Image (cartoon, rainbow, N blue to C red; front, side, top):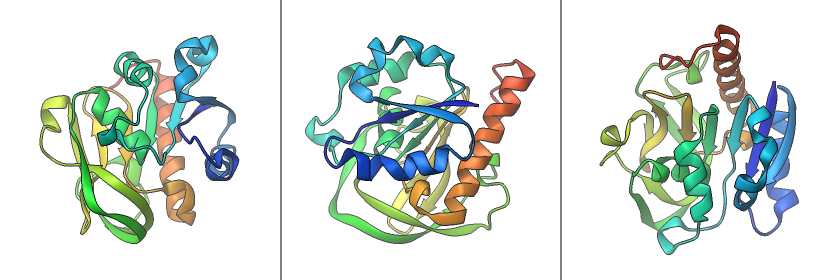
Length: 205
């Protein structure tokens, strides 16, 4: 499995991206590329999966790269967006991003509302780390081609999957959520591996 981590952190990059690296390296070889460099990173087509990192940037304040949005619009590689990466994935397909009144920085109980292999071997409710101000809502989600997989008391959309592509997003931080997070990563890479082995662009995975 060859995995490309897309970094969207601008400050304290090593500290922030290391948990992604520590998690991803358990499942395959990897490289890291900054989101603004994606279009010039000609080797990205060699990868089996993308992991889109979080960021302190605020999308509602214009804190995003338009080239990153364009990349996500036309990308065909299976991807897992995390926090900011989850929001950017949704935005690329036309979903509106909302800003909360206060920053959420805590362990949160996330409730799985739709059966999906991303949450295989996990209970109906899991405790995970949240760290965000912005979020997406149900509004416009289905018309953009996504379905909601999970919610929480603080966020009505905690996880999404595109109905036609192997694109997943989670609002929380599985890379910092211990064995629960590791299980989510493992499930995602298992889905990608099965898709690759079948040699099909299945929409059912």
